[in-house]
Length: 236
Image (cartoon, rainbow, N blue to C red):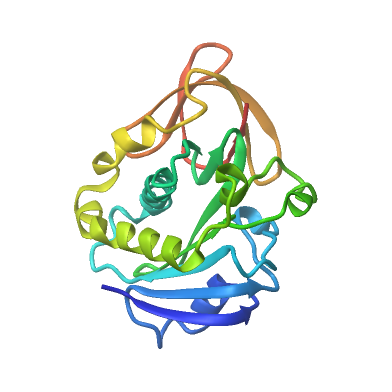
């Protein structure tokens, strides 16, 4: 189903994938115990020095690329379903964060090397001590803290990847509509006043109305005009 390459430490699994993209086949997974320069969207640093957490990148080379823009949302749904096996209730913060009790447990990053080479990176907090969580600059949590015991990383990672690839081909054919209900019911921001930030960190206030059929965020501005947001960060 997929090929798994496990590394001890790496600058970043996404960077490793980009540097070796021509030699790596479709559905290759790069997993590392630690990263020295892990990052998320807008190159924000992701703490990556805890071996019992998940740091991985999925290399995808689909023939049909029309639905790749929604791959991060697909992975967020898959991650939520995997976390739900541990009897917790994760939520999705558009477009690519997964939260538990309002605290970030995972982030997803999609990078395209070219039209047909996609790298889907993610970090998941599985096992972190409370004292280390408190050093993170934003509200964060870890699966072990939520369930009160250590999580087996190999078992979790295998579940996650199996869940991802079981419906991956169907998702490529059908796109966001295939996961829309699963995505929307797990969102934590719809029906609320939100602030959308761009790369320059300029914030604009909106009312979060819905998610449309292609995964865009539908909002109302202060004049009740309906707009579609395709990228950015939200707070609420």
